Amino acid sequence: MKKIELDITAYQVAKEYWGLPPNERTFGRVCELLNIQSGDTSQKIRNQNYLSQLTRAHEIAGLVKHKVLPARAPGFADHATEYAPLLPELEDRLRRRFGLRDVIVVDTSDFRPVHGDWLFKHDDLLHEHLGRWAGRILASTVRPDDVVATGGGRGPYYCAHFCAIPPHSTYPKKVVSLTGSISAGMWRGASDITDDNATRDVDADRIASLLHSKLGTKQTPEYLNCTIVDGKEGSNAKHDGPNSKDVNVAVVGIGALGGGHRLKQEDILDDLKQVKNLVKDLNREVTAVEKHFQDKDPKEPYFHCIGDVCNSYFVLEEVKNAPDGEHIYKRLTDRVAEINSHFVNTQPEELNRICRKGVVMAVAGGPHKTGAIAHVLRQNEKGSPWITHLVTSDEVAKSILQNFG
Image (tube, rainbow, N blue to C red):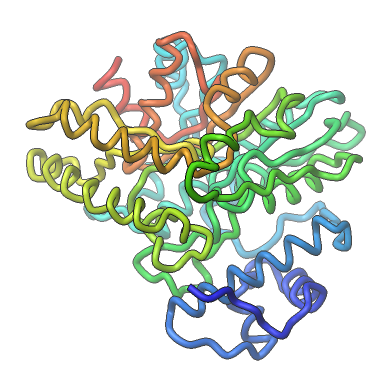
């Protein structure tokens, strides 16, 4: 795939992007304002990702200053103007069952779709509600000398958006990103990938910049700027996250390989070209495995057998229950390990180290992520926790307690 080069400067892109109202702040809109001609859907997305990279470069150079206003920015769903109710009984059961320090379970019954399909707009609304509570927890957790880190994804994105340190309070020392630009990209509802109103720039570098402003940190944020490497360089380039050794508070998402996940867009995203064939093979096999589970139990249409935390992928142990499950599990695990070897990134072992000295809060919900969230929680049972805090939805909490409680 040819590298995109547009006759445009980082300054022009940043000026147009940050000059837009929050509810219109998308790179699709910036393309319109800058008269960038687009072709098919793939070309539009590549153009938008290129503009995103230019804007990030301008921020890293310290040429963009963010000012946080006290009023809530427009552009978010009306249902998210208030805190959704919590379910303390479910919270207590999850906390005791998996040895977590704190759990928030959000009651989503008021805005859950009444039909069988979990629409992307409802999924985004759910993450807004989770992020509102997560932002409140994070603001009450940080201390003056803390180094706060963030992964990518909508959970951390909305957590950062809704986080605000009270006036006259203390501010953490610094903010860093854990997963850089390869963590998430621009999220879109896969039902209509060209709908700019459904986009959220959820890369960890971008979220770190937003969180830096919200938390009032004085030091410049540190960006991990991860890459995907070719050949055997991946195994040699592994690290614990070059700027995460001092982190003691982290916010992460939990992903599931399905729907609008970035690994489902291997033909579109330039930064996946090094692992494109590996991802294609993985997606083909995953589709076949998931079809078996959905045929076996039509009431469980959201099962996804691959999950990830901080862009580190894992296979759900439930795969072993399928016919020839041990063999399938081994093959998927080998494929996932090969893909992971190409990603220079923060690893689960590093999250465990942060857990031992501080806080790792996961913000994730929705029925399609239930298996991945359960997998992460089971690491607590094994004595090597990846998270200490969880903010999730009632559907996920009930399902996990029913199957693992």
